[in-house]
Image 1 (cartoon, rainbow, N blue to C red):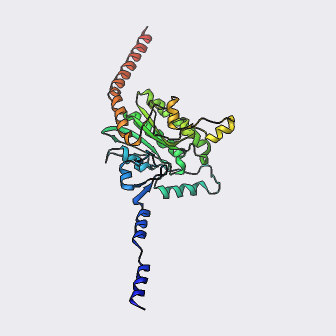
Image 2 (image 1 turned 180 degrees about the horizontal axis):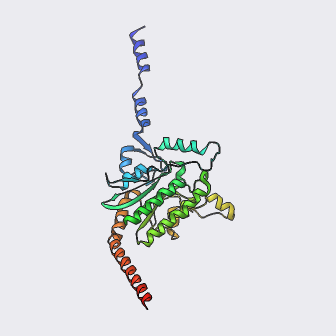
Image 3 (image 1 turned 90 degrees about the horizontal axis):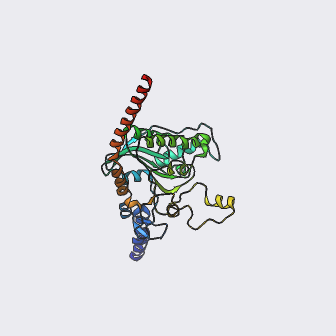
Length: 311
């Protein structure tokens, strides 16, 4: 073998510079925007909270990243982390529900489709629930409902505002009526929270649909949404087939809902933490005052009852 042949074989054996660069790109250094196709440096994209700097497309965000974006460092405290889903109906489709739960838990590192806890947003205390679409489409089963209910009840007891980041395909069919009853349970807890004159803000992200939209997603004192999020109850095709009518362009988007008065504001993800802090701080001074007035009214009612019994 000549020296030339040996050198040629060595070049074939070693990857080229272009191949090395392609391997580095594949390892996650760059992320392609699904809306405009622009390649963005992943580190810069995360610094911009996974919002494309070219077209403003809001990319998928899991619950861990949401918490990191919203909650001040080292202030997050989990609630209800030991609650685990079961398979009460022994549901089986192509795969047993219990097996699907195990697969999702291993894949996501979560027990179910929501994380709940307390923390600080720009120094202001808040009870936060964050739904995670990775876990069976963010569907609402009995554990999701129980965790959110306990979160709201804890916030009512501690006089905290509640923020819930919604991202869900709706109720979880594998749990049947046990899933549907979570709509009423969470709504009841929110009613008691409102009676205590406390603030509740749902943030609707892509997508927010089904039983979640039909319950706690639309019960906020102030309802926020991310740009171009899909928000609705039934799917567009189902509605069109039922009504036998063509729906308007942009139907079930956050922009359409804002125009028709279903939500209060569309807030880009990069401004969400600041906006939530402003809303909470505006309502915060009234919490102790309202609590004092409520106690005073209750005392007056007791005096009136006392006087009526003495007559």
